Length: 61
Image (cartoon, rainbow, N blue to C red; front, side, top):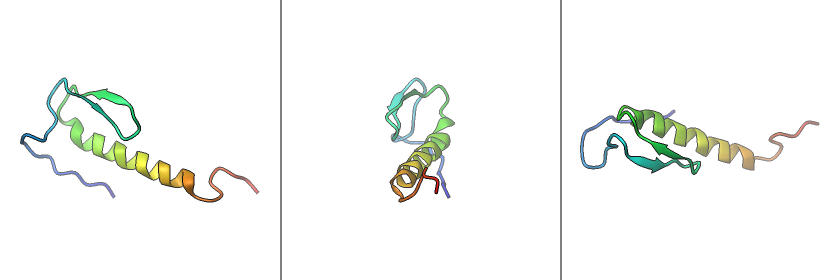
């Protein structure tokens, strides 16, 4: 489960900021509502990395 707190402050994203995601993709923030979606995308990337390391993933008997 991914949860994000949407807040205002010096650590929040700002419009036109460019950040690098966990997957290494550079993303331009066009809308500051993107914080939650970015956090969820990073969690999905982390889960993909863990799944790839598991024994038998992608193999068929």
